[in-house]
Length: 202
Image 1 (cartoon, helix red, strand yellow):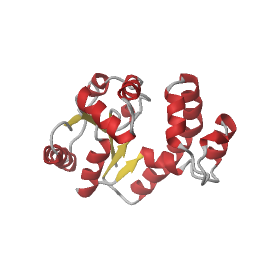
Image 2 (cartoon, helix red, strand yellow):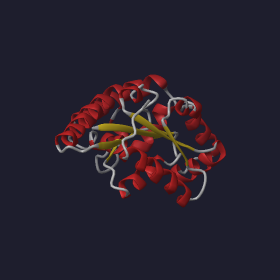
Image 3 (cartoon, helix red, strand yellow):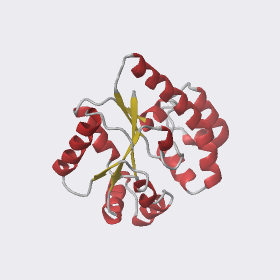
Image 4 (spheres, helix red, strand yellow):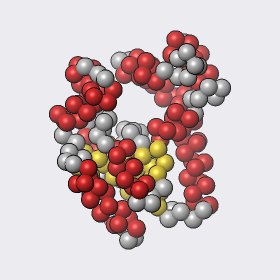
């Protein structure tokens, strides 16, 4: 089974491209969805987070308040490191389990959608990498609208990310998401066709 990574900057449109790939029949494993699942109430990961950061990061229903926790760890590298130490091993375990199921079912190509593939050097162990790109101004505008952030908060989030150039430097495929949805879909369809036609990383 070929595993193709899908990544890009925050609010660049990874989820849009992932949805389009699903529409084309691609099995897509969403690392963010896995990360949400491993911190559900009654999970060991959530218990560890509460022990480390306190109960104030739970909402009224006992769910993790991701926005509140996110605001704290974005401003503190040590706390971000502590969060990753708790969550990432569980995400890796759940991801490996799902990929093993697909291998057993003889799935030929799987897409692994994750924000930090390049930052964590996970892309080097994959069979290919799709990077979604977007110009800085549009990215900031979409991030502010999506997460209800001020321009200052949005810029801080973007500044905490690995520069897009670093991701593009290791990309096998690039989708520019700065145009309309049809243009993005055309690029995505072209990439999926190449993958199905036996593309291999040089």
